[in-house]
Length: 231
Image (cartoon, rainbow, N blue to C red):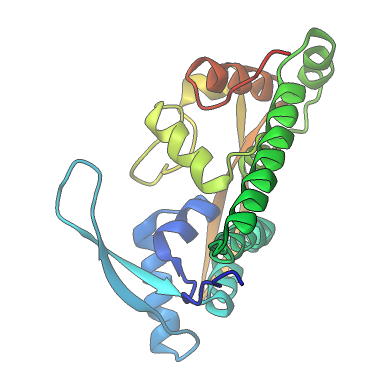
């Protein structure tokens, strides 16, 4: 028999900030208010920061409470939250093979999955006809949806784009694109009001355009984040 993982799965306030394109400190404040009102509970934990600075305190919540937090912050990101939980739960279901036949079967299954992913990435590579069709699309999609299509996941795509200095990594414009990329037509920023307690606030959401999809796919390929295997 395979050994099933029994580790309790949680989601951190940092991950929720990534998914909702919000500042981490704002997410934590919202969670603290919900905790004081006995709406949710969370476990504070320290995590290392990039560059080896002072550790940051993050709040870990269970699945139920993560939905409550996202519903309060930015309900339009509920779909991204569902996708992230599927990723976490799938990873937690990994089973360790106990016999040689089980190990061989697992290797075969993983090889098949890898082949399917490689095929999907190859199909997703920019081609002239596809590029022309996408570039003419003006509506655009959320970055989390784009990330799912190319197989990176929403948390990963935001991290990569901050590292590449395409998205702003701090301040009130956290996870929003730099102005030059907006001016180039790769991204747009949509705004919508939402109610938080007694206040009405504005939520900014990054949308990647059709032109931006083509440009970003090529950039991610060039930087080695995506790989296309020629047949």
